[in-house]
Image (cartoon, rainbow, N blue to C red; front, side, top):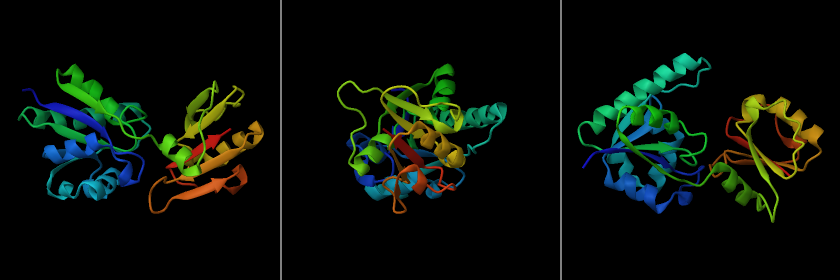
Length: 225
């Protein structure tokens, strides 16, 4: 059988939100890939190891993929990471790439997946609970009811959006531009909630745009209704 690379979502932060399939794949395979120079320091590892203590005994494949703006540089990192995965696949070893949240939604593995498939390797995406679903549940709020649309935007790239469409909004990746995001939210006249580090020990909930600190962290998610 041909070895396969799996992109496995571990959920947003609470290890109890990991899927049974994610746990099984970690237990059954020996090579676990994580995005970072120090795998044990990654958030995905810290989540997963709470649900799967056996992770401590696995071979951890560190994939250095820093957050840089230069697209060519990013692509070089992604290509190098794909090659590191392929080296293990060539030995007949499946590789389990652990990613925060869901493996189909703003997921780094999706960039590696393209390279892997171009090189003739088999991949599989294993879904996980998304941060926005977990945040809505934490707030005890429905994201959408009846025929309401739901608009999901990477806020850091959509600061010119007027939020004029009907329905509700989720703003992802808001932290680095939170001051501008708050101005956009206030101008929209919508009711606003923010969850920072959802499901993690340092989770913080804000209600209303005024409560959100300008220096909110990277993992800050906004729901506007």
